[in-house]
Length: 194
Image (tube, rainbow, N blue to C red; front, side, top):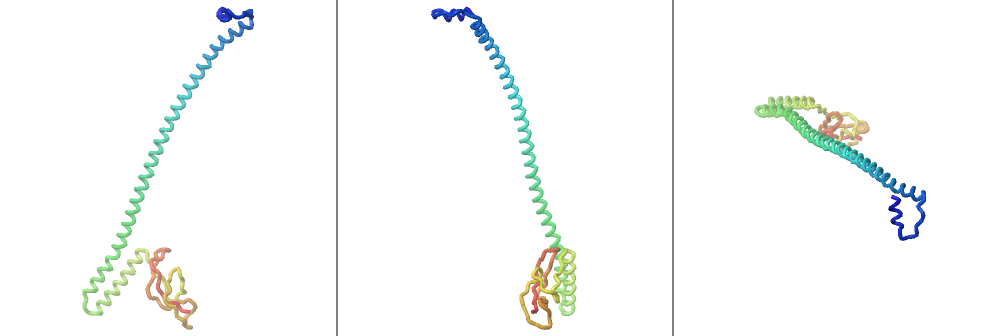
């Protein structure tokens, strides 16, 4: 190495080769070795980072697959729930209509009679059957006659001043109202006093 340095410096003013220069030259040659070590170390770190990246990509792919499966399951659940809701509605609708058929049968039987007394009895029986059918379906008539007017259940269509009745008292029911649970199906149409 020192020979090379001397040859490089031929033609120029030569400095004496000192221990410092030799040490510097050795340091430079060692620096190449250190550089190789650093390069190998960096290559190892790059390989390690590549392995970690591959692992993370595999983990990401797995999570993405789980996400897609979950989204598909949710979509299937939503579709099944909508179908089930439609089926329940159709079943309830069919059950309610089936409960009305006996009323129609009774009306047809009453219509077959020619004399008024049997027709009256038939209509009375039909009304009773209709009330029972509504009760089975959970439908209750709204009490109105003699009660105090309540806009939640009653619809006042007439107002009359009469000292005989109290303030807001219902004196006549023009059309019956019905409720099922806490839901009003039809408001009672009434005449209210005072």
